[in-house]
Length: 62
Ligand SMILES: [Zn+2]
Image (tube, rainbow, N blue to C red; front, side):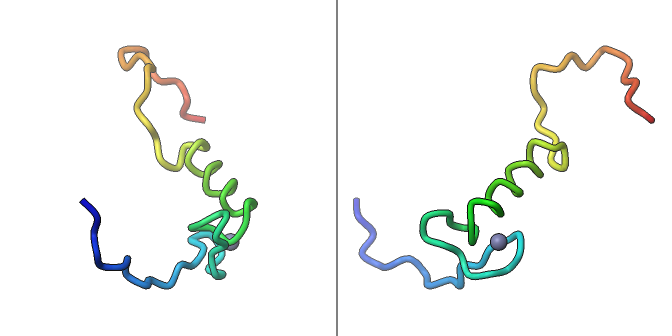
C-alpha cells in the first residue's frame, strides 16, 4: 500500500531553537540540538518508567 498523496508540507523547524531543520538531523537544525533534546529526555524531564523498583522509599528530595 503506497499513499499517493505527498506528505503535508509542514514547516520543519527545530523544536529546540526554532531554526529550519536540517535534512540529516530532522527535525532538528543540527546534531547539537538533536543531542540537546536527547539529553532532555534522558535527563529526567520526561520520566520513563523503567525497571526501577517502586516499593523502595524514594529519598531523592534534596
Ligand atoms: Zn536547533
